[in-house]
Image (cartoon, rainbow, N blue to C red; front, side):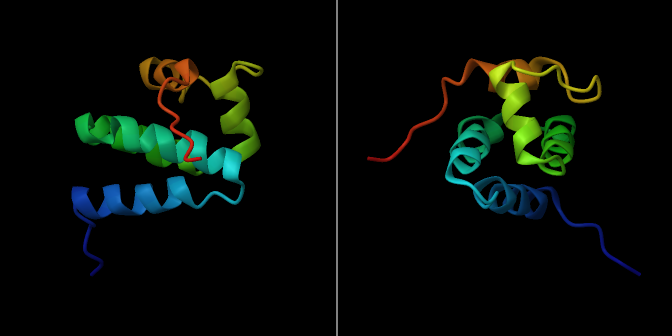
Length: 92
């Protein structure tokens, strides 16, 4: 029988996936969003973020930048927060 991962384990996996997307731009956008907001997440928010992580970077970035409409299943308050882009701290 496979054990269901704990909420904390899922958060740790989501953090890794958010910061290891394949391009620096996606890492900063998606990883920065995770860093800024994950502390206040419950089950629903984490499930949304896990679904977002399953999408292609190009699509996620287009939805966050507002150049494409997001699918209805991902649209809502969390995506609106991502679209504000006030969370990205790029180290210099």
